[in-house]
Length: 371
Image 1 (cartoon, rainbow, N blue to C red):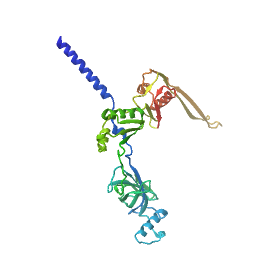
Image 2: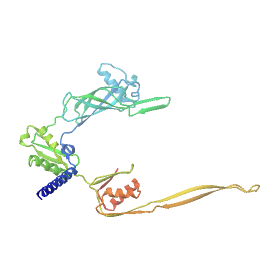
Image 3: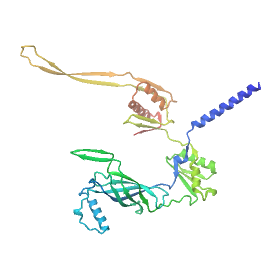
Image 4: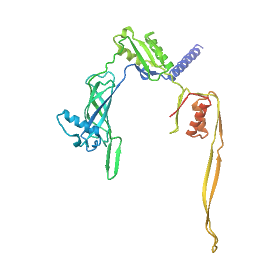
């Protein structure tokens, strides 16, 4: 008897453990690092104007005045005086250079740059970008770009026919710019840091704050759905990077609004798992009308004085498919509706129209986004 009771007890404990493990695994959690970032840690945009030289006759024409003027000004810097009207710029192209200055880069680091033609050049393939200062929105120079341009495409033409791959007027130069000035990013100098949520949400912000407080005590507060303020613990005053690293590894369960995304061009429907629908009846059927025009020719009898006559006949055929009525209970979700409509032969575009009608009827408890 005791062995039986012990076996039953072990079975109950085992089942409870399995149930708990299944419940825990069914909850989708993610790191704070993947749904939020430290406020102030961001890249900066840089832009500059320069020249690409060494092109094989695919550069700007003499009608591009900015190229002529830029080449003339550059030659003057080297002590060469020349009349810009006599310049031939088919091997030169005026370009705009753009780049992203990542946070925490230092002087001497290199970054990638993108080179884009701004004139009538056919291709900048094989060209070399001359030294180009890159400025931020405040007008300060933060990097200088120079180097060979790689387009990853080509353009060829002959005898009135042409062929092109990708965009030969836009290229990149990996590690083509050297950082000359860094953007100072100070973290925790005031004793606090803030997390910015990628998708502002009241519930998610509250859960992030609760996860941090459960680990370090009452040091965080969600002031709004997009921001969580954190006071640095005393032991981390001189180790802000380590503290941020530990916070980013905390797991929380983000919350999202119920949404159904519909792409009418491709007939694609994507929905979240928390979408619900009230009890509703759906009638799905179709009416097709086919109009055919035929031309008949009437010939007269042989050796008669009659004439050949043509007549046009129009046949109208109306076909009405049998309507299928589906009644779904209030516990149904979007997957149940889509499955039922697929069972009765509804096309993807029919499903999209029905979802729009359900939303208009107020039975769909989710945001319906059409892209």
